[in-house]
Amino acid sequence: MSPADHPGPIAAEAGSDVEARLPSQLSPDQFRVLASVGVSRAVLPGEELFGRGEDGQSMFLVDTGEVRLCFDDGLVDKLLGPGQYFGELAVFIGRHQRFARAVAETAGVLYEITQDAFETLIEREPAHVARFMRRSFAYLVAGEHQLVQGLRRRNEDLLQTLDTLRQTRSELTVAQQLVRSDDLTGLSNRRGLYRYLDELGHQPLAGQRLALLLIDIDHFKKINDRSGHLAGDSALRAIAEEVRRMAGPLELPCRLGGDEFALVLRVADRGELANRALGLLAAVRSLRLPSLGESRLSVSVGGAFCADPGGWAAWYSQADKALYAAKRQGGDAWRLDE
Image 1 (cartoon, rainbow, N blue to C red):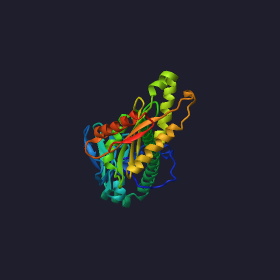
Image 2 (tube, rainbow, N blue to C red):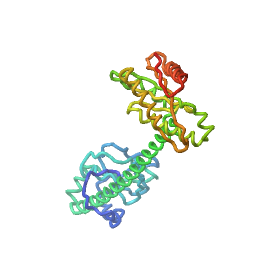
Image 3 (cartoon, helix red, strand yellow):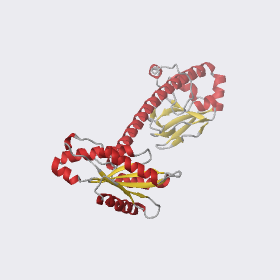
Image 4 (cartoon, one colour):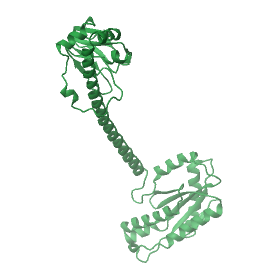
């Protein structure tokens, strides 16, 4: 078979052992008949006989020396020696595009047979040519089968590689989420908040207003001192869950650190913002944690509308001022920075 020429779909029923059952080179009689219409050509090591993608107009017989067929695309090169042939599709069908690059591995002698010379041989030695063509087509079928099997293996390798890349990307996404999440509560941390704020410019508000609620647990130091840090952690997780429940699909619940939380909201007006804040106060007030005994939880909430100028620092300052106004009232209350 000539691996230098790439056949189209020839025969799916060809067995993978066809090539093993066929002799690997021409018999002396077959070689003599074919060489009788060829032109002898001496070659030097490294000399290129044809390049990949060229239109083939002749086939070659190797009389002495060796020729290497280079396929690229990850396919193994083929080394041909005396009595073997390559490029035969060029004389079978004419001007066939070469599938490989042919380079002389050593000095040697080849016979080059053009399509016209091969046509002459068909008229002169039809029986010999028929046997040669049957043999060549059998090799082509075997070669195509091996090519398909190789492509299947390569496709499987590609699928496995893609799966590994997807898994790696998934792990990277999880890692990025962990970096942007608070370990204790699972809410976004400041890094996650800043990422969210960066993306706000690409998200239309559709007639809504952006607002910020700052939430601070009332008397949290006393909870830690009286009931211990485990109870304090339990309180943080419980309140974080209420903050999370208050957030809509495009809103961000966040733990800023310590006992301070933030909730970035999209609301229609002041009335809706007040309802969201009051709903959070009531939800926290109704919490009952065994680790706190008879103690009750409450929070103070400060709100502000986020105007475009100023950015996060200005919004935080406004909401923080309202938060401390609620704290001064004794907590369990909310205030809006007007």
